Image (cartoon, rainbow, N blue to C red; front, top):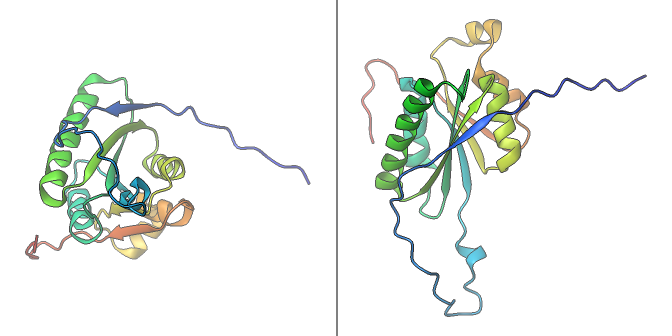
Length: 180
């Protein structure tokens, strides 16, 4: 039996420079020996975002139910081309708005990356790179049978992201009120 290697796709991405909301102050020396930077270090949470309402709902859910003050929320947005300036500018605007909202709601740090490629593969690749505490993503609101037959990003990530647990946040129903 021979080992077959898959073709490695080119990995193209662009970092997003987010607004600096937290003032930079030098770290004071720990007062106690047990009080080190490692103890105060938060978790990394990976949230897949796009322009849809279910993605925004998953982002809000992650802030309300998972994020803590010392955590870093990594926003990942998959696009067809990172070299398209119109797509990049709109994606950066989305990331800026979400970063400001994350800071106001939960006082968390935010990092963002716009990555080129298939959304499911991109999210799993970023999860491998970051080793987050959780990968959070929304659904399109399709039924179970339809998403299994047609395939979905959340279904792909659920089965293929081995670096972290995947949390799939169901979309809000039309009549459901937000508790946030």
